[in-house]
Image (cartoon, rainbow, N blue to C red; front, side, top):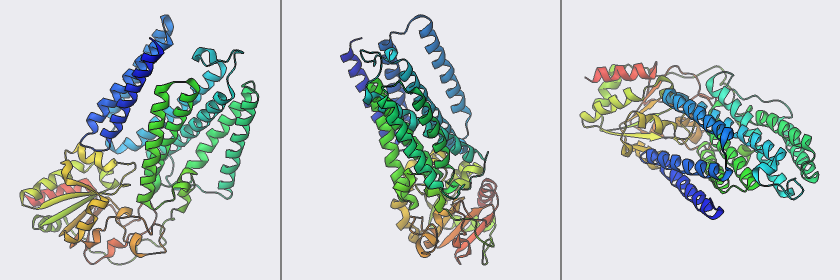
Length: 467
């Protein structure tokens, strides 16, 4: 295959990837976006195999690797519950990061195999710099994603781990990585020990960057690590002079960075502090003394009567719905209300759940119509016109303290103003604080009725009481 044809095909793959991102921007077009992404990846892999001229046992090993990896991916995709999607994404990011490290090492030791060796058999200084940066970012992505996975999976505590001098340690490791990159470039690639030292430091830095991040900030972590994995791939795309890798990495890196910025706005976080991994320490600790005040506790029968006789109901799903897998029961409840002539809508906070779009995916799985689902900025003004705001497992994103308490750690964070509705039903297991570690004063409002218990069981009971 001629280089010109290969370049055109790589460009076509890049166009498919752009169309995939465009499709994935909405649940309604996400399936088509996935098809575009698969088509683009198939083209990129096929062209790369042809250009590599792989044959014999080498080709057999490559095909076997693709078959094994594809089979594992297919099995995981079919079996993974939607509630575990955030940790699955984190795990996949770790694989991308480690791939970047391994490819960088292979290019350093065998540049001729990649067709990037100089006349003397080494690598150009710029290529060495790109290679080192790709390995460093990949190593940070790998260990950072592993830490995120263990927190999301509950293998370790999701609480922030903060110690004195943490930021100075991270800064020192960042400087050390830069120094060893200079050593590697200056040596013309001969100082391979410098490559492994900088990579090892980057592995450690990935851990120290993510451990101070608490559970409430995990949506930002997911998008941030996604961006890191893209930049690692883009750096290696420069080194290997591979157009497809460069385009793909740039798309993933830039889209992840934009998403991180959107997430930061949604959580009132500093984008710079997110990139530096220091924002988790801003999270509050558990509230002293637990919830304060009196609450009105209702029953499924109370909720069913009011919901059936409401004119407009806005449903606010959160991670509690995901944990209880209550989305199908919620859809059934909404259908029962609509049969009574109730206007039903769903309000989604950009950081509800544990990853961007988590609630949208769950509602789509339950076949909730797309035109009933609204983002925060599109529906917040409607709460004052709603008879009922039905909150199911969403805590911090509905906390009035974000609007009313300048001393609160979440003050200034955009939240869903559910308290403006005539009545607020709040399904929650207990009156405990959310992931931000602060009490929610919404529990104690005069127009709030707490429905304490498992979200799925409570919603099913409400549906029964409606019939």
